[in-house]
Image (cartoon, rainbow, N blue to C red; front, side):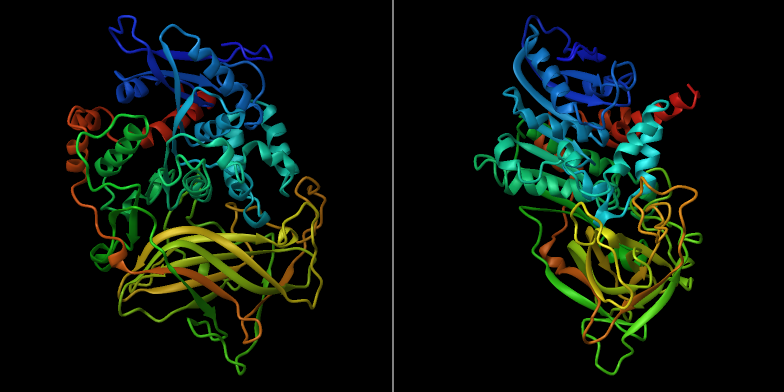
Length: 563
């Protein structure tokens, strides 16, 4: 298909059999991973729709150069315009986008195409900067692994350089940012599938909030969201044995079909907000939570501060004036704390055991007593720290974990703050020795229950590599750093006094706010008796993971010369 600037983008079309001159709505999916497996779209969306797949420019067999989604608004508009001119089109197009495909699908709305009538997104993001540079810290593993695993040759290095040139939130990010534009752009139904340990969780939640609460008034409060435990992080499935593939697949299909206008035959218990309430994978956790719930909206939490104390405890009571007011530790960029789990792409992810790294001298640990009754959290997590350093720039990393009675320390969520970007903006703000700085970090969101006999642990340190790039503490921008740049050892300070009361903020809810959703497959069969779910599950046993990860893995194998 030719674009407005003369590039030919590889496009594949699948039409329903025996169409007899009928006109169809089209489900469109644009991707950097190729379309040798376009049949999955036909299996799930035919006979109702035509399906069209297209390679992003500069990927697979499409011409041009990959632009990190900066030309995708035009390219997707050109594809939609081409579709509605075809004799089999009824003039309406829906987008389907998972992961990188979804980043492209979010740009589709920017040119306000009249043919766009619905969107469905899986494990993706409507914002760019806060995913790749949360609080200014570079998510190194995700950026490096994805760019060099997807974009060919030396152009991958050009793309990588473009990203690190914009470690501050410049206008460059506007091309992948819908914030403050939802009301003007969103006037059709949409649904989202996220994951609590997913690389794009914060952007998926931002998208749902924008489409649901900030869109055109005609479609406000109609968006749907499904949040499973893992998203891209399917390697962590062993920790959530009650998150059955059949259940999450059925839930995802119900959302997609309804958003795409295939109305359920019978009303079910599945509402607009459906998510998995996580817990530990021991007997206590499996009996406390680890179930699906479905609500009209996310529960309203009581945001509760857990203060860090000098003796290594954490409590809802603030420090007293008699406590030691700070702790100093040494951060050496040549010996960073290694990443163990979390929201990663191509390395071990999920709720992995932190016990070994928590014993390091450069890791500060604060822990509650074991709880007698379960503590349920659902909502956003934050850390508010008072810090200092003897270098002009450094990082502070934060983690929240579940401490098992057996001694395991399972990660719930983590985040980072790069101090030169603590105030945002495009000009770095450096530190001065002897000063105390108040900083805040979002640890994104969760739904997790601390089971009886377990404890909460809060960690502060200064590295988490390679999830985040290791800060050399020299104040240089990423694009300036080289092998000859100085690497400085930092003496970093965390304050925990009555005056400077560092704390973590948790979204506390009650279990009865999140009733369990039962018999998910039965709910599907009630809603869509005309669809053979059992056959689909046999032929595509983990459909949505196949869509997201399968295409990417096939592309990586192709690049490595394995196929």
